[in-house]
Image 1: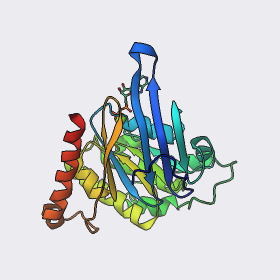
Image 2: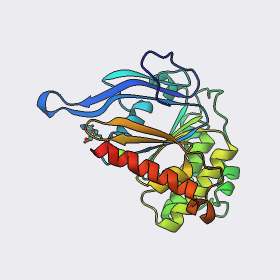
Image 3: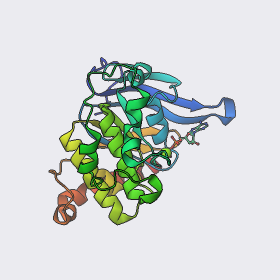
Image 4: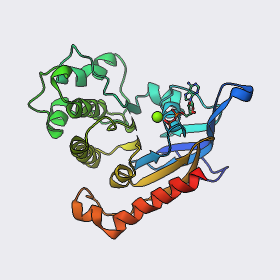
Length: 269
Ligand code: ADP
Ligand code: MG
């Protein structure tokens, strides 16, 4: 998965080439990302794991055009981040669901449509019917509720439904489930996987949980801190669906967990 320097940039998927990001100057400079290269084929579910401060959020922010690399090159479906955002190729799901409190569930999902009503939508993205997607994630009975009337898991489902409905082909998710309890987390994981299976998206997903990364991903990208680098990319070969106790307890699944944990430890040395 890691592409050697000099390889032609692909127009499919996400291409990250020799990207470095430094904050500050001189002795106080923080090298958040150091020469990171990664190729994410279209339609893949890729997780980033690594210790706190290894640059996961920084990398997502660069992809989403919320910041610019110090050096290197990024293309999303053949477009630099600035164009990719203006073409609506990217949807961002943050750690906190970021719903407007005075709007109902269905009104929150409609928000990006209203904000972009005058802009032509990019043909790459398939816009989905909010009512159908909300039903898919089990919120069909909660359409008229306000965020304050929803549990944390329900709020996060609204945020995920909103990202899917809007139609961006690439979704960036920064630890979206970290605030949820274990039971809620499992059901939201299952629903995200089901949405991803039904409506092809390229997903870049940041998580602290090795188990979650192996459960969800086609590829787990392991990073190390100071400076932030990719130390391993592990393709998970376990057949889907994986959210089943027998699958999770299998030697194959546990073997991938061990591989990711070993790669994380190697990165600390
Ligand atoms: P992660 O998401 O993996 O925990 P981050 O990408 O948030 O890590 O941060 C990577 C490193 O860059 C950290 O050392 C962090 O302190 C630093 N950093 C991130 N954003 C900024 C910023 N805006 N200004 C200065 N340093 C930053
Ligand atoms: Mg982070």
